[in-house]
Length: 192
Image (tube, rainbow, N blue to C red; front, side):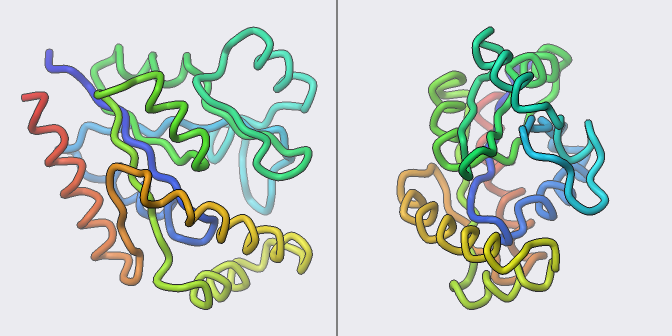
């Protein structure tokens, strides 16, 4: 069996990471599974535990940190933590699948540290900040205060884009999906 890889998509909220990942999961040649992150925040809208996130109480999240269960975790917004359970990733790799995850910028570097050359970091960029704000507003899931925090966070995260292995601008969803798929296919060639 050939070696399997870990792919990380990172970038600000509203850049289309989740949509890109859903489309990639439909491409059988990539043999890719999604690693569902854990979070200490409650579900929003139609989110379900085990589908979008593993929703943990703040106390459970902290206990799992103390036990070393996370390959990466970060307090992304004050009081709200996100992380990737090492067991989730390793289980999929051992089953012979490539793994893709949606992780914040700092977490992405921790995943790279954990999986080294078997990991590729990709940063998804918005065409511009105005488009990003329009996308976030169109979701209609955040208060004005929360929206302001997301936009501030986006500016911060974009500063890390040059440190990623690859960068993709999502100006057109079909084109962005095709670009990310091509990057993944190119990376997997080294494992053949």
